Image (cartoon, rainbow, N blue to C red; front, top):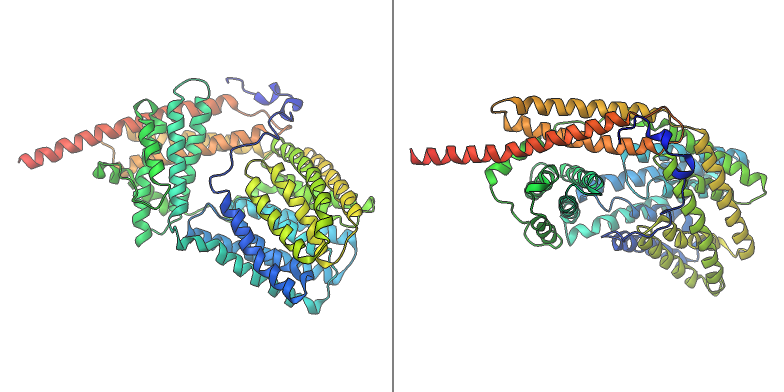
Length: 561
């Protein structure tokens, strides 16, 4: 832990180990929501086109329908904005692809445009933190459209189909608000409570640091969810009640010895349904604790340009890897180089280690998916109705399984993508299978080599900045704690700021540690910053009961007078 250069002690071979890459996780708590939403968004447009005998246009409606996969963890007010942004982003990419396809059929130009689009989509999705499935769906849609022959007169109609399906996807994504309008924020709060309870049960033994880091990440995610809710109106009342519970989770992480994990779990269970939100008690003290949350509402997010800056290496990786993968596919004579391009685009994660894991998962999932396609395609050729139904079933399976591991979801995504090519007419299965396997291997190999070649040298700088930010946040909190009677609002704001800085520090350090070539990371400074920061957080929490007791005594004295 005290090494100043952990990277030097960890070989590239160990970082790129296959251990755990294919291990299945527990499914997401809401795995069925994106799965059902995808079917509800895709089925009506496809069935309508089937009835009209124009299933060849399904590519354009699928572009809009797949937008329903986004933003399922966001409160509905924020979800409405995010989904609208995704639909507009999808339409922008499709418009560029349609325009390019109508102007040229030069495959090299098409691959180049597709690679540049993939880089822009990757950077924007990461900068805005749109969440899964990220840029992959957008890149898949725009790349596929690029390689379909196009004429300028048909572009408005194709865009209209995508826009109409996108509007329907927006309605599908917002529909659960009619049944459980506060579901996302209640779920995020419950996850924070459970994470804090788990961290408290780990004590100081093995796994405590990892559990505490995961707990702070869950708490920070819950705060981001709650602070995206309106500050006034009916939803503000719900937000306030949930904020009290998140504060309790935050306090439990800072002072686990004084925590009752079962009480936290009981609160989390009470949030699962639609019943009344549990109360923490001691409302005056809780009100003081929320003063720190109010301060965050006035803070503006960093400008988009500043958020895009650190993502430049990832964008360059994406552009280079996708372009080279597409060119390699063309050199091998593959008729659909966008498959290799999309494979490369799907690899790029926060660092090289995660990119390697995704490459392995992508190859395994695609090869298994090709075998599944080989089994399904004879039945699909019996009629277009079966073709559509198989695609719907695979759509559901992909979203239901992908949270367990990316490769498992790919087992369904791959045959679905291959069956979609049948919408425009019969395809030779043997050729499709061969080309898909070759493009997967080419895209994964070339894409990963591009990630190795384009190093993220800014990762070390970001760690230094995160350490400095955490130290400054700790110093502010420590100065307030040194005062005899610090202002409650200032102390709570400082505590919240310190907790957020420590969460960001851990995420930044983990991301930088996954790069294989860069300057030595200040691991000793990171450890010291985290240790001192968590001690300061614990001290701030201990001051709360003292202030609460003092306030209670003052009120009692006022009553006696």
